[in-house]
Length: 79
Image (cartoon, rainbow, N blue to C red; front, side, top):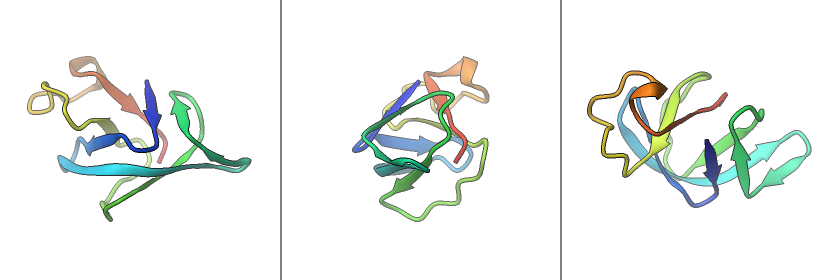
């Protein structure tokens, strides 16, 4: 999976949407992150997101029924 600054995402547990405003690493800011990278994602809205929470595209049609990343196009990030 990939996340890019400007993406509309949805936090699976709360089903709350937000826009990605930044992707931060120890080495500086990035425009994009891929699965497996250790990053901090900043969002437009203050949402309760914890390490291991599932983030997905806000327009993912399967959002109402998924419980794992196998159930929808999703990106699991350490946040």
